[in-house]
Image 1 (cartoon, rainbow, N blue to C red):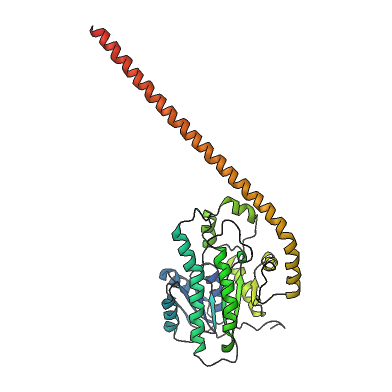
Image 2 (cartoon, one colour):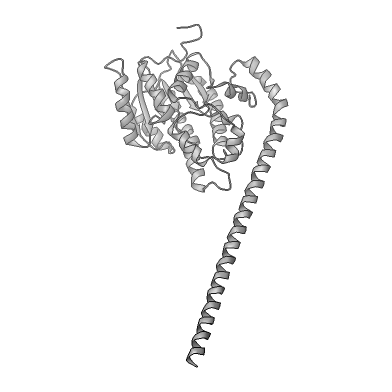
Length: 340
């Protein structure tokens, strides 16, 4: 154990993970089991949970280790309460990993997608963490701190076009962590917030299908992390005592844009970074706004071109029909002359 480790012990702890049926949540669950933790994963789809639990049981260190699941709709507070009732024990660590991203331009995103995003990102984090704190608050205070860890995103620090149903909700999760951190103080509970970048998961593949081209342009080429490596990095940084966890350098840098009252990782340097960014970002905004104007101008030109082609096609059809009618009249006239 190093000088700056031991803040997030996993061995023999009871850990409850939302969104544990796939992606980053499943990777974190596997690492926790491999390090001797008792783990429950929670998600909506039971067959996915069963599949992951079967795989996790192959990694247990001790035959007495508990690995289980609870299927629940975490967008409902009563369902979140039922999860902890079903488990029947006070969790040592709760990780709110559940979420999804449905990129798209605000005027083009279906209303159902907004509702789904609110349910999966904010409501699930809010209800799952609040019900966890409720259970912990009724239990005897432990000598070692318990933990509630929320998962936000790097775009919580810098929202931009295409992430209208995602970035604001991840900002809300960060705000929730700040409030929860204070309300958890009487119960010896530490609250962390994680800000991952792009991760190579099923969710990221689906995200790319609806992501607007302008969003990809602004993002630029970015590394996509392997979920297992990302999980290992997150657990390592949590164990070192970080309460604001970033998975790459760009996430830490962008945190300088929105310092607020949150804890700061390498605070002095982050504050200086924030000052530099305050000078750079206005220039960045000018560049991005110009990209956006160009993007929409090209869309308008393309739409106009398509409309013109459709009009030309319609005119051609009309001309063809008129020609057929004229030909028909000529045929009838020729037949009449022959009869006469």
